[in-house]
Length: 470
Image (cartoon, rainbow, N blue to C red):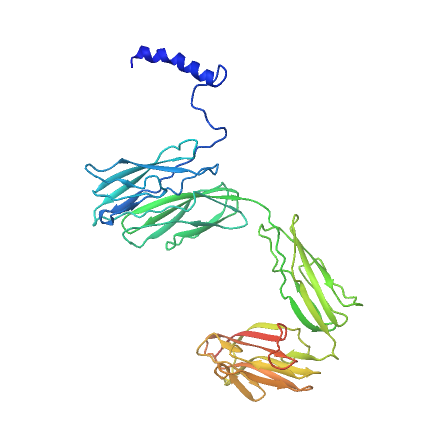
């Protein structure tokens, strides 16, 4: 076609297009779908493969369409080594493959279409190398961008690969971060994953490098932190107690927290107490406070915390059962102190006897508890988990009256001890000398006023003593 004939046809073409569109003055270019975003082709990462591997797998699953349209794939071999006869297999699939037949570089291009428009082409390079050549590792992040609230850490995950099977080491670094920000990221060289924690909103560019002993490969990603206030979390230390009337019950809200680090306010209130009770909370707005049941019955105290915007209440609260001294109960005392203990009882202490003088005893008494059966007999069960030690060289025992029990005595069969009504019995946790070593001795068991195998979460005791002696 001559240049003059080409320009002769143009007015006719414009006339036809104007007639089809029902009027003049319209653009004669290809119509575009309003608001459609072209899809984005992602042909995967470059690869180094050995010729002996026979098959190269390509992966276009990272391609995206922000309109959520279905996309069609079209791959083609752009270049390959001279005289290579390699061809793509299933070039219209997400994951085609080909069989390299010569050493050298193969360049493959991907275009995706959302039914309305093509994407820009994206290429991937495959280097086919000799069997005795080292193949550099490859690594990529699972996301180009990770986002998270400043209240949490952002977890970073990668997909490293070394087709030679070389062991990889990793280095992590933050390339850029908001001015004045503080951040933390692990420096371990062992793991291909990491996490970053920051105190300032903004973008943190993170780089990871994989090294196989010969070559290295790197990848970068962005960890983007934003700030959003989240509700606080109400929590109490100790959710159930049994006490005698007028015994003080501690209320401890210190386990509560706020992920944003906001200062919390606290409010305690009764959600249940016996009819006729006039019990009050000593300071209902303190994180640490207490109350004393004035009559027998069940009490429930709830805690609500507030961060200035959101509130949260403990779902269960502190449940307290008050018992009068005339009712059947276990009177538990510690050592020489005759004041009854709240149930359950947990004790942690440190005892150092290395500076003692005089003869070294065969056993030291680390802790001691006396049980008195009021109104009903007490049934105590000693089992395989009753007694333990952190050191194989230190073997503690429980002394009950004149009877000693070691851990080995309790492994196969439980020991049942019944204290008759009106009687009392003392249980002592004892340890032999440690010869300067630090050892932890622990004793813990449950009991019941209703015979064996009828235990509650409250009728129990545990004590752990960190002990050192000559």
